[in-house]
Length: 402
Image 1 (cartoon, rainbow, N blue to C red):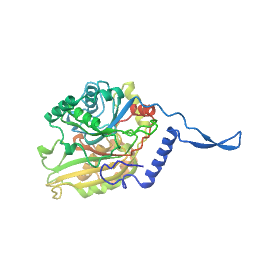
Image 2 (cartoon, rainbow, N blue to C red):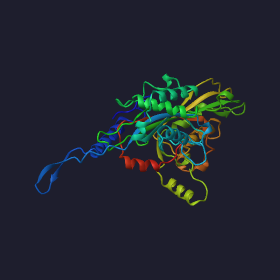
Image 3 (cartoon, rainbow, N blue to C red):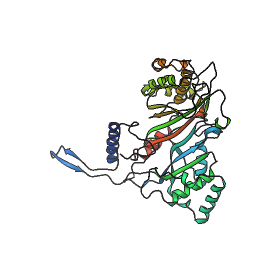
């Protein structure tokens, strides 16, 4: 199975046995969907007969693109489209509607909460084929888009295209690059689209690649400024943990607590209900949330010192790196809030196993502030995995995470 090399080894993220199992299952599904021949006993003749493949699937009426999105979440009410508020998904869909002159729905791997940032949000979207062709435009349109983009302080060319990004042979040509530049010209400075390319589709067209179903793992990073007073120039993407002579920060205790959180656990103690209120929809949402599988795997939780450290008094910059297969609503921020309480001596590091086993969110402190959290990276597989109709239904019923 091909895995997109988005930086870092996947050995720790997905063991070879798991990847092999996933690859075999997906290959079997692809073979069935594309009408691979197979033998089956014929009860009447007592012999094996060869099943003829079904007729090739009709070519899809849309073309699917995938891309990475970076955004400063400070001014947004989260990723997910919501009425009457500014969201990242809403900005992207508005830009796509202008570019392609038709409504385009965007799917994202992670539905980040209000105030959470991203450098590597993975998305895909489908564009009707006539719109995709007509929007390519001529040289004048391309030059106008490039000038508008440059005037808005867009990314430099070297930064907009990473040499380590996955490529589909022949898919990333001039049209995709033109779309990327034009879309960035339509987006605010706090949102940037990069590495736009056509998403893989199976040879018969029956299966499509999906940013949700093909995602293997995610990297979230939470950044702390542990000091008496925060740096005003560093406060939009780093949460302040106040220290003093009376309140020092024990980073080793945080590391001991973090070691208890690695692995596969039931995370009900670390997730919030995503629905509030007494309405029927809210009650239905809470019931659906309670019935969900709350088991997730944190493959690694690293505590990394980034700056000056002096026994926790003068403090310094610290980042917490979460490599996981998925996150529940506010799970990462609840973990960070608990680890901050451990560092300040309010919770013992060896209490973490008891907190996990209690399945009781009320025992934890408040979640850490949203602005310290960034979705840095998503790892994914290349093989198309889902039929278009089933894919659309599943993505319409997604759930929120961080």
